[in-house]
Length: 72
Image 1 (spheres, rainbow, N blue to C red):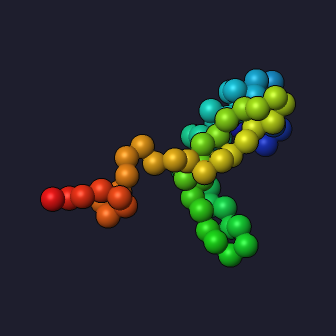
Image 2 (image 1 turned 180 degrees about the vertical axis):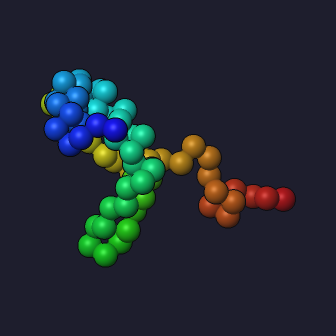
Image 3 (image 1 turned 90 degrees about the horizontal axis):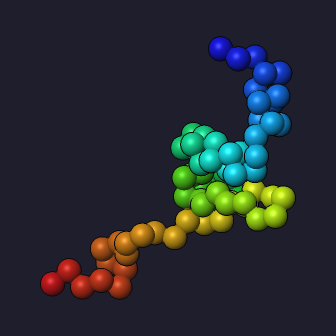
């Protein structure tokens, strides 16, 4: 198991795209408290823009039943 220094060293040598990929993986165990409203990390898309990693709300691939779909 790596110690904290090794993890920080590894993360600092990663590209932003590699860091974003790691955030996507870790987001399954991440909960974000935004003004009392909790969001799971996997509810976000993790992307790179310039020199920043940006988390934006993920858009569902398919509409949920009852959201503009007719089950009949």
